Image 1: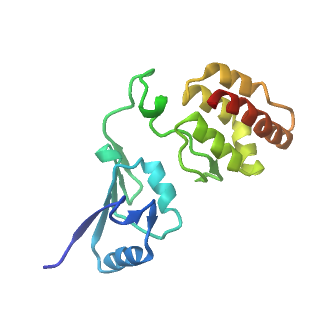
Image 2 (image 1 turned 90 degrees about the vertical axis):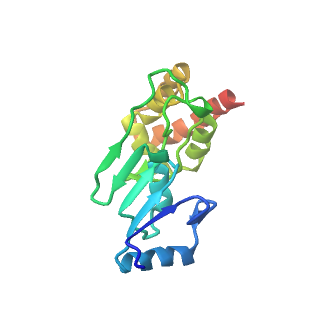
Length: 186
């Protein structure tokens, strides 16, 4: 019997602790070489999965993510089922957006999504100043704090930390905001 489609789960099947073992990755690549259509099925958020798979050279014809709510095809087409929750509805961990905040550098994710303010603070601590510059130029920090974490007063305080030069602003923003956020998360 010849397989034509192989559907795999991510967590606990091809990955342990969010890492794909090299032997499993090689087997997936071999299936691809044999012309088997590969489908990855997972409960993970699609953006999380992309970040985890980045650089692993694993190709899937279809990714069924978010417990079937999002399907991504290899041609770049994505289909979403259902819509976002009504505004003001709190999701797990007390946020209003399912994805959270993903820090990026040159349009590539450099962190897992921060779904709590504590995770956000940890992510900021690890960011290089150049990445903070990009987010600061776009006003991302204040917007995220207000929209994703629902803390408008903290968003306003964060916005007040701006200065005229972006590099100085980023260094100042990180140092000042970490203290400000630490007071809120403790």
